[in-house]
Length: 72
Image (cartoon, rainbow, N blue to C red; front, side, top):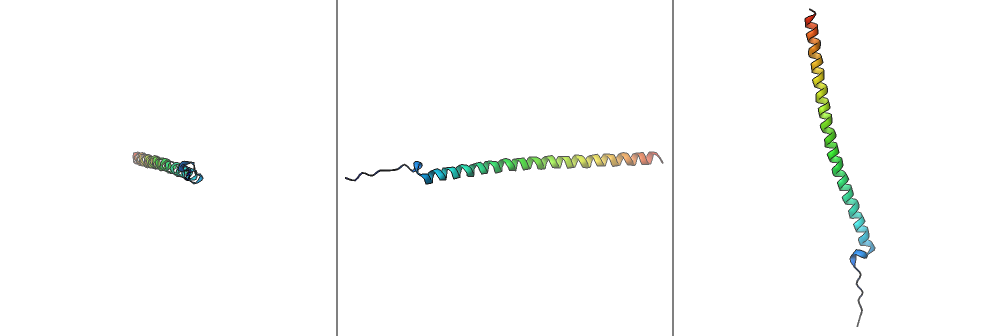
């Protein structure tokens, strides 16, 4: 009678490497998602900053025109 020794797949070195590879892949995916959220956040802040800057320029230009017309 033959004795067959079964080796659990989770103990094999190849499977351990596969698990590490999968963990790295998941970590990279999570980091990528975080960076995308961060980029969106930065873009929103940049757009708000630019809008505010343009609004301030418009106000300054209007004030300048008012002063110019008041001195005439």
